[in-house]
Length: 139
Image 1: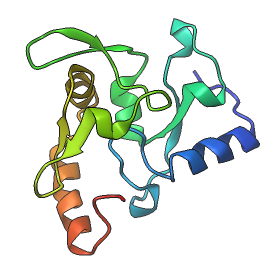
Image 2 (image 1 turned 90 degrees about the vertical axis):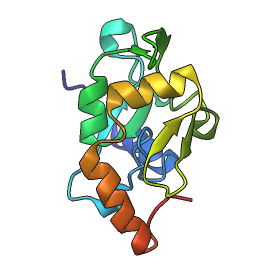
Image 3 (image 1 turned 180 degrees about the horizontal axis):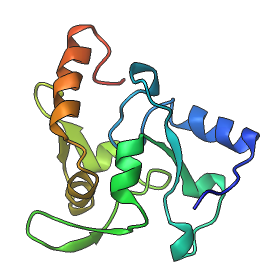
Image 4 (image 1 turned 30 degrees about the vertical axis):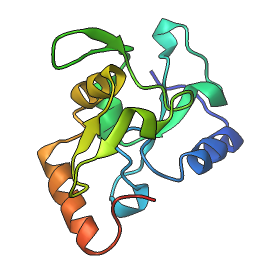
């Protein structure tokens, strides 16, 4: 469902997330796709179209998340997903030694990595290339 988001609100959200996907941290400027404004708490689950419930997401993370609010850990435990406006990315995720793989540090982090497929093979490969030219990992 497409919802109108005022231009000023879109600008604030884009600036807040430094033009990066709030989940996989991919920089919009390094891709050929336009990132999307994602309702963290989906409208179908009572979420609102306001600053506290919006984030910038790459199309792939946004599609995998869809309207879900729960994910599974590696052990099959149901847990809430990472909330980019309320949670600290660094509290739930870290980069692997070579900075190409996102490691979930908490159940929330693991469930989010799993559901959103934040380590898609093509993305891991391109992170390596971005690293070579000094564009990854993000600061």
